[in-house]
Length: 400
View 1 (spheres, rainbow, N blue to C red):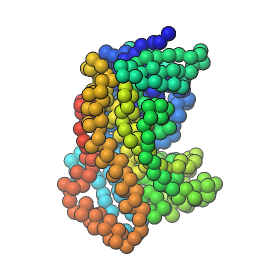
View 2: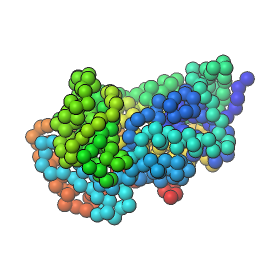
View 3: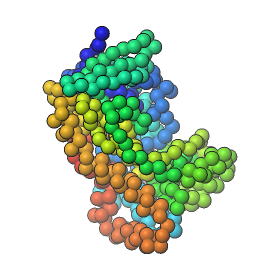
View 4: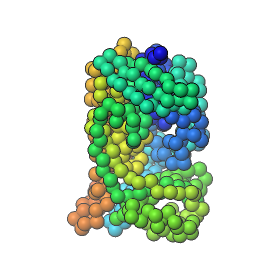
């Protein structure tokens, strides 16, 4: 016998959980299907990454009641330094100089996961199904049928809208026949932490090199989050380095502007690819987060973009009689299109622009750095876009 829902969200990661929380007050009957048990240690996306959360993201999480559970573990970003090895000049963004309170904050994904679980526990209408694996999906004109595999046996759901929030290798996306465009950057990222000689005190760095970007993010005390990209062909060698050799390699790539590093954390390489779904909707299915687009970590836009997906979708469906209606989903696509296209293109273009060591591009980048350094207005516009104020921002992200 089928259980009937208005909305079924497949995927209990950072974006799926956020969407479920946003819809708990919608009046719709909503189910959240989670592959793992709802515990921090069992959810793969609640890991040791350090997320750079844009200002709009923080405001969105506050509107969902999540941020009060996470704010104590967050470190504000108040200054950003951007440079490219071998180029002249650099860009310095200072929130005080630009009349902004802060650009965003750094929060370990595990702490955000803990905050989401705390807020999910307070949801009163949401039905959580975990652990459960989606093994079948049939989308019809008026509804969709989902087949789940659970420890208790098969479970069947009927819903007017199925949301694929199930990551880069999305079962929902494949089941509804949405193809993807994939770009292999031939890079791997090492995500870890370091101890700095002195506290970063709200300072974040983005350093570009011929072999990929290096980001340093402020954490509590003298700890810092590191995202180090290397050529995929060099990933095994870097992974085999001991702590001292790894620190020396980071200094070789990043320099000494943040002082001496020590005590690197555990690390392993993550292959870097861009995966873009060719459509965001198919029948009564919609894709959000990494199921819709997985981008290069450069600029830290992955979760920020995914949360904007979730907030916009929630805003559209909460008052709708039929959350899976074709005109509603078409409106979702149109509202997300400018932000999605601009953010994914910016990330991809920046990887290519900053990774090219040709003399004309070096000169062009240096001129760009000089132009930004000379204009408070231009730097402010760049900062606001990085903070998430682009496209049609959901009202939920502007409530605070």
